[in-house]
Length: 276
Image 1 (cartoon, rainbow, N blue to C red):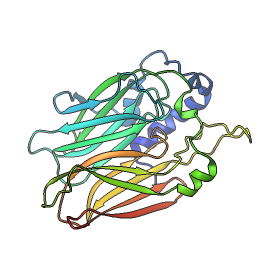
Image 2: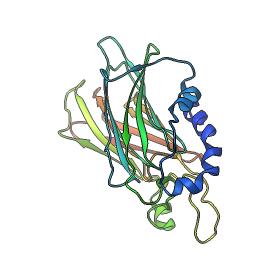
Image 3: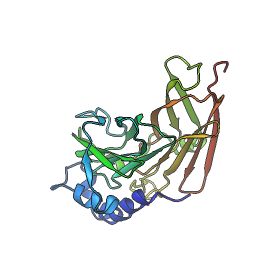
Image 4: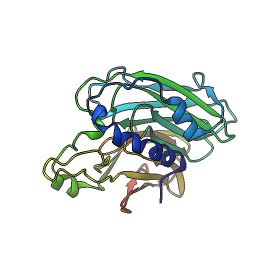
């Protein structure tokens, strides 16, 4: 499975810029001038993007404590009769600005999502929602950089041996009481152990860059129904993590399938039924 078109275009456009500017990015100094116009043209072309303040609530810390794992959230409420096609998180000043695209399964007018990203420098962050009818809505917020090394070029946490031994392990935890009826709301936290290497980290022993190895896609299914599919990027933190909500359909398991750019596939079923 290859990268989705919006992320692939954004990553290709910014890869050369990231390599040329790696030195300045590593010091965490905010780049001069807005970059959103260029991102919009590459990802959305000439499509109109509407003010989403009435349908999207964005959550982001103004000055995060940990730039390696900054929480970004979106609470989307479309008018009744409309359905969410996808929810995208965009970080303007990161080398790969489209952090994640969540394609939402089913005809849902509400979705709550939280993901965790690497913040490379001070940046506007955005949530872009596409409806099933093709309309785009957007909200944005400025996030300050707390200082230190830019996160996309920072070395991974943990030893190579530990990272290799745990790669592919998954956890899925229900938030609040377990739903016992069908069509009941349920929220969960999910995490995948994976280095999500950015390709911008210099190995201090070999003096070569650690090759890019990122989580490309994560699919979540409740029984046979797709809850969501997440298309990722190097902007997602090491050990990608996200929270999401869904409506129960009576299935006894949630199955998660993750793929990375090496072709590796990780899959696990989690019991969610009332008796599990």
